Amino acid sequence: MKRLVLKFRIWKDNRGQDLIEYALMAGFVAVAAGAIMPNVASSISTIFGAISSHLQNAAAQGGGS
Image 1 (cartoon, rainbow, N blue to C red):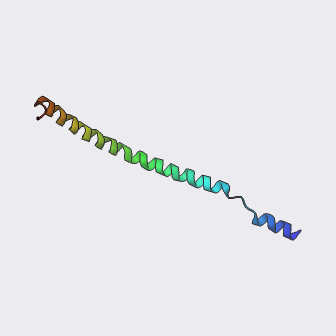
Image 2 (spheres, rainbow, N blue to C red):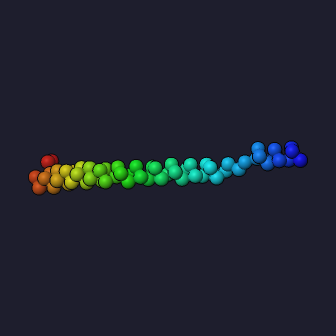
Image 3 (cartoon, rainbow, N blue to C red):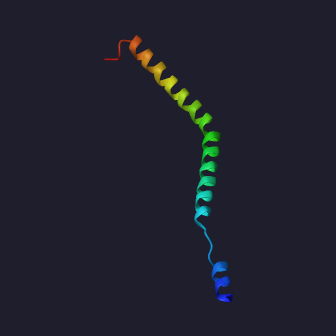
């Protein structure tokens, strides 16, 4: 009987632990991406605005060719 009790004490189900760890990691990545993206979006908008301005100036001057 003692062996049976010891078998149940040793036996553990750890399958759910990995899922929780992955979910927490995904949450941390989502929070970090949310914190970074507004700055990145603003920078990208500035870059595309500058490119658009340069293209409009080049088109107004006849394309430079």
